[in-house]
Every structure is written in C-alpha cells, then in structure tokens.
Image 1 (cartoon, helix red, strand yellow):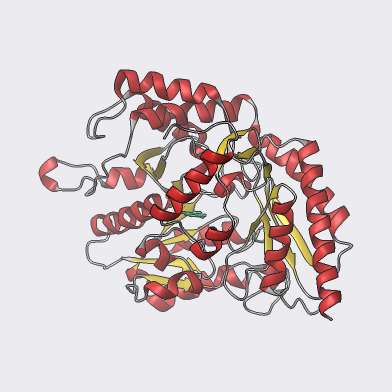
Image 2 (cartoon, protein in one colour):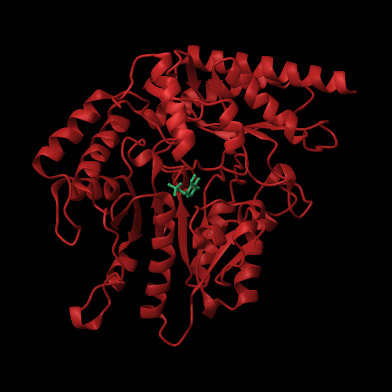
Length: 466
Ligand SMILES: Cc1ncc(COP(=O)(O)O)c(C=O)c1O
C-alpha cells in the first residue's frame, strides 16, 4: 500500500483493518480501538491531521516531544542527505554528525561532559544506572555501591530497571518482582504532600528524606540519586525552590552521583534549555531524549560529567571502558537531524519562547478555569503545565477518573488533544499540557476555550448525576 497523505476514506478503512489485524498498540485497549481510531497522515506546526480530514491541535506535542513542531521539511532533507552519504555505522567508529551533536550538548551544559548515544529515554536512564554502578566499582573498590534512590510517583521509562526506578505502582504491578537496587523516597508533590505538610513550614522535608534514605540504606551501598527536575507524568509537580539544591548538596555530602532525568524537561520545555538549569544544579549523569530530536527520528543520550568519563579511562587491558553497546547508538542520520533540531531551538529561541508563551498560557488558564470549582490548581513552568481536578477545592478529593477522562475526550471531540497524568489512584486526576514550543497565542486561546467548555460539561455531568 502506498502512504496516504491526503484524506481518502477507502485508504483509511484499509489501514484500520490492517492495523487491527496485525498491530499490538501500547497502553490503549484494543476493544476501544475497534470502536474509535485516529489514523494520522500529516502534521504541520502544532496541528495533526487524521486521514478522515479532521485536524487536532496537539497540546501534548505527541508524547511531550515534538518541541520544534511538526512538518519541518528541512529535517527530511538533512536525513536524506546523510543517508545518501552514510546512514549508519557502529559507534565504535566516529562519525561527523554524532561528534557535532555531542559537542552541541556539551556546550549547552557549559562544558565538562561526554555524551553516550542510545535510542530512547528508557535506555538513556538504564545506561545511567549502569554507568553509576561501574563508576562506583572503580572509585569505591572497598564498598558495594549499586543502589539508586528514586522518588515515588516518578516515571523514568518502560524497561524493567527504569520501571523499578519509577514510583508508579499501577504501571509496575503486572511485572513484579523487581530487584532491590531501587529504593524510594517521598516526592515533592506539594499539592498533595506525602507527609501531610505545607511549604514553607515543612522545611522541605521531602529533600531531607533523601538523606534519611541514603543513611538508612548505608551510603556505602548507594551509587546515585535520580530526579526528574519537574516531575511530569504525575501531573507536573514543580518542586519548591530549595528542593533540588538541597538534593544536590546531600548527594555531594555522601559521594553519591546525581542523575537527572531531562527526557521531558530538556530542550526548552521549562523555559530553559534544561530543566535543572532553573535551579542551578549540576548533574553527574543526565538522560535526554524526546526534544533532543523533536521525535523526527529515534535518538536519546546519556550525558556524563568528565569525572565519570575519566573513571572509564585506562589501558584497554584494565577493562575500565564502557561495558555495553547498542546497535543503533550514534546513528549518523538521526544525529544529523538532531543537530539541526538543536540549531532550530537556538535560532528561534524556543526555550525563551516556552517561558513567555508558557506565562501567557498559564495566566489565561488561571483566568478562565479557576472559576470552575473542580479546578484545584493550575501549575507548571514554561510549556509544561498541569491542571489538577478535584471534587471540591477545600477537601481536594480527586475528581472521579471517568470525569477526568471525560474532559480529555471532550477536548478531543472538539479538535484539541490534551493529556492526563498517570500516577495511579492518587495522582491521575490532572490534565497535562506540553504543546510544541512554537504554539501561537491564538492556539493557546483555542486550547483554553476547549478546556473551559470541557470543564463546563464535566460540571454539568456532575450536577446531572447529583
Ligand atoms: C521523565 C521520563 N523519563 C524517561 C522516559 C522514557 O522515555 P522513552 O519512552 O523514550 O523510553 C519518559 C517517557 O515518557 C519520561 O517521561
């Protein structure tokens, strides 16, 4: 079958039949897909088109990743040009685009890092866990530092180890058991503080809990702490200002590496090139994916500080080199596309744009949506925003799942794609927004209008049921 890029009902029906008979999709229930599908054929800017001709304003940038927006033809040209020269060769050899991309990332970090290429955010974190353990083996020979301290309600990926590091029980439960290398501490989810405290009188107890956890486990068993600067999947939890600097200081105190997950936060999303730069901390290990290439091709990376890189240096016979390989890492065509993606982010000042457009959108959301009693809080930074839905602002009881899903569905029926947090029973009642960083004011207005109408419909459903 030829690719369809113009609406054609027959082609669409054929794709649906072919897909249902052959594809196993992630997350969605196939019984639901049998009834209703989306068949994407093209996209431009912040808009995605279905084969049936309908258009959707994509306020999720795919899966929080198409930072420079859809339909940049020059990226297709760059991929084609690089593929004509050489698409791929294993990365134990060097290639020009991967070297260029590594230099770009190192420069964005202010220097002092090396970059290891992989294909997904999960792999980037997974490589980070392994690098932390290998570093500890080299640097603390008398100790057994292998544990990663993570936070409850975090999401770090879909492989067994990244799931183990994550703290979303509902996502983990079907794949139990996990190994004991991942230990959890409470997360800075202030709207629902896990310790029942309030900022600032809490004294940022959740950061102190990281120290308690390291001490409880025994520092000589802990290799690293992993944090996503702004926790995305749980419903956009922006930590208190002191939190990340406190966590960094605790890591330094116990010689524990600080592993920062920038898979969503990175590449402009939060108004800075990297999320951690909002707090001036300095990762030892950093995972990047998604916005590094705005999902034009699969590419991700684990970025390590030179103190970690240096630990892997030695005579080949010493066996200190990185003990892993992945076939596609450093793929030349993907790297060439990522280089141009980052140039576009810089040329069009999209991180700054995320800050200003994010402020505009946040003001508009607060102005229009807080009138609904079911909106508990609108929060976020840059173009990473959460709208937490409750039955009542005082009690903060979570809005029922069906009603939250109803808001998502209502928006979609009206041509706007929004997301929903995935933190299990306690944290899946937040509407999440992560649009392309090129979203316009007019599109922000459309998004706010769609949410306003969807919330009105949810309130009417509640009144009807009551
Ligand atoms: C914070 C974070 N880390 C890691 C991942 C895993 O990335 P991937 O899906 O590319 O494996 C995700 C995916 O959404 C994520 O949100």
